[in-house]
Every structure is written in C-alpha cells, then in structure tokens.
Length: 437
Image (cartoon, rainbow, N blue to C red; front, side):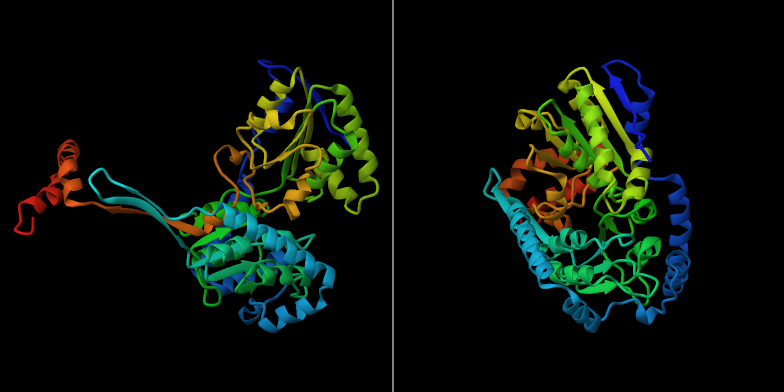
C-alpha cells in the first residue's frame, strides 16, 4: 500500500480548501461527546455499578468493584517482572522530570504596599488528583511518568491513576512500575469514559478527585470536557499532533521519521503537517516515509493515520510557513531549518517546540524533562502543557495597614457608589468610625 498524503501549494490570501479543512479540525468529536454524556450520567447516578457495566461493554471484561484497584502486592509483583534496564530508565527519566519541574515551580512571593502593608501570592498543593493514562495498543509508561511525577513534585498527598486493563484484568507491568516510580498512591484498572466519571463524581470504591489530568482518545477527551466544573482539568489533550517547518537543510529521512513517530499512535485521529518552501523536499519526505513505514511493526495503523490526517504544504516562503503553523497551533512543533532559533522567536501557538536537527519530538515524549501532556486540536492557541503548577492552587494574599486603607478609602467608596454596593464601601469606612478605629 502506498501512502496517500496530499501535497498542496499555498500562498497568502489564497483560498485552499484542503488546508482550511486540515487547520480547522475540531478539538472535540461531537459523536464522542454524545456517548460520553450518556455514560457519565449513568456513572453519576449508579457509581460502581455503572463503572462495572461500561468496563464490560467497552473493554470486554467483567470486573467486580473489589477488583477495580490494583493491590500493593500486584504492584510489587509487577516491578519484579520488569527488567533492570527499564528500571534504570524509569528512574533516570523521573530524575529529569523532577529537575525540570522543580526549576519551573512558582515560588510564594510578596511585595510592599505604598503604606507598609503586604501583597503577594502563595501556592498550595491540591489534596487529591486523578491522572488518566491511556492503555490500548501500548503501555504508555512515559505518560505515567510525565503526569503523576509532577503531582508528586507539587506535594499532592493523594494521587490516583486510572488506566485500562486487558481482557484478563491485567495492567502492563512496565506501566505499573512507572506509576510506582512516579508516585501514584492509588491505581485503578479502569479506563475510558467510566474512569473519568468515577474520578469526577466519586463512587463507593473510587473517591472523588479535585482535578483530572492526562491525555486520551476522543471519548476520554469529550468526557473530560463534560465533567469540568465538577473537577478542574488540565487541558484538551487528545490524539497526537506534529508539525514540522523545514527548509533545504533538513534531512528528509529525519523529517519522515519524526512525522511517523506521531502517526504511529494509530488511532486514526492523529495529525501530521509538513510545511516547507521546497517541493523537492516534500517529495523526498513522502518517499522516505513509505520506505521507513515498510519495516515498522505498526505499518497498517500508520498508513491509516497518514491517509486520514497527514498533509504536506509547500509555501512561497518560510514566513508563510510559520503563519500556517501558528494557525494550526500544533501539540508538537519541530523547527528543522538553517537558523532554527530565529524561527523560534516567531512561534505563537504550540504545545511544545523542538528546536534544530538534534531534537526529535520523541526526546520530548520520553526523556527531556517537560511533560509531554500537551494541548491538541488547535487548543495550543490558548492552553498550555502540564506543569508542576497545574497541581497547585494559587491564593492571593492582602495585608493592608491602617494607612493603606486610609489611602484607598476614596477609591473603595467610589467603586461602591458606581456599582450600587454601599455595603462594600461601608465595610471600609466603618473602621474609622468605630471605637477600634
């Protein structure tokens, strides 16, 4: 089977239907939202019974609520099955995530008011959070590390992880070991919409969390959207996306491999975009993709994903290409040009940027340090990726002196008058009328 990836030419102010359709992909699938709404209503009403019902319907396994949780003994046994090389890998990756996470944590801070008081902000970890870790075709041990670890760094005492099991009720031992290293305090072998509902509403077996984070397919993403308000959320983190801006210095084999790395997830909802001013490069990348895919274990899934969600755009200039990428607002964005840092300054919308020929997107997926839980579906235009501060609350602190209140009293009274809230104004003025004043 040969790849059928369109190669289209684009210049500014030219209407190009193929490109417009690609750029305006929906962040949420309407059909998924309909199903998610039905399942979530059932989980809210029936708790464990509904979770059990949909785990059988969607995952093909009958699980009693007593088996939802992965026991401590199972977690220990899983770690014993994992080879030493992976154990060292997981520990190294965890250390890299911790180093980056701690460096980026916002610190409590304060500043003086004009009359001797104090203003500031303090940061407090959430008490209980939930991390969704997709299962399916591959054990996403990296996602376990890239989400749960951040909650641990933030100081969250209760960290719940939900991930689907196989038809025998088994969770991959490599994934379980990664969750253990990352700091999960509870692990449930539940996936899909029902896992989001259980964490959002709480059941007799799975207590409610305050926030849900992590990526997922269309149904999990739709479910997360629908429970916002019952819990906080990180972002829209759905099927994988990648965009590459390349000039004549880019190596076609490298570009092809990086595009394939995201199509490899194979749900059929992935997006891969190549933008370049060079038709010759686009043709060479397509040929390279065909050559490389032939030897990969997920060849059929990659070809399906490429046929459904890949596009090559040949522009008149790199500046035009940069505009296209910013409109696309990709989850992952690679700059493979002669002067990549020059183009980095022009990035407006991207979940993560990978700069230069020696920075494959997979480095970000697995080892670099920043979380790979990133916004998708164009939402990188207004969402940011997961960080340690995603697991902390920000509280403002105001400590006025008597002199501060005297200075601002006219402003408080003026605002109270305009808004018709004389009680607000009175609450400030009364302090200078009572004996204590």
